[in-house]
Image (tube, rainbow, N blue to C red):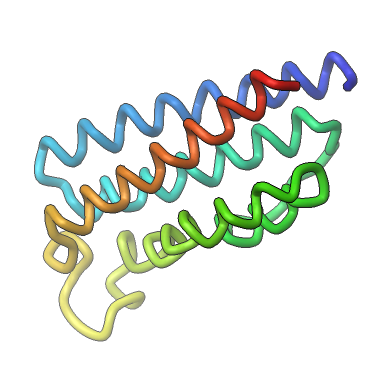
Length: 136
């Protein structure tokens, strides 16, 4: 593993951890749509951290499920993670844009239950990736 790759992975993972903390902050502040979006971002960045740490020079895309598929090139265990955390992808657009919903606005469309679920899925992704990065 190249040193620069590991350092880049660490940078992305540090931001993923901060996003997880920010998810909890938004959840406690009852900003449920924002908490859901930050949870998706957290998982996305954690997965990108892993892929960068494996030596990738560019990691493209925003889909948590697709990034899990990409990560299976390095470790097939990411397939099961993708099945668990892939639902975070539904929080990428509708949590931010009114035209991502059939009516209303994102601030009114997401609930405490949505945000708690999103947080738990993001936390699962972070813990999983942390364990994988620690074992490299």
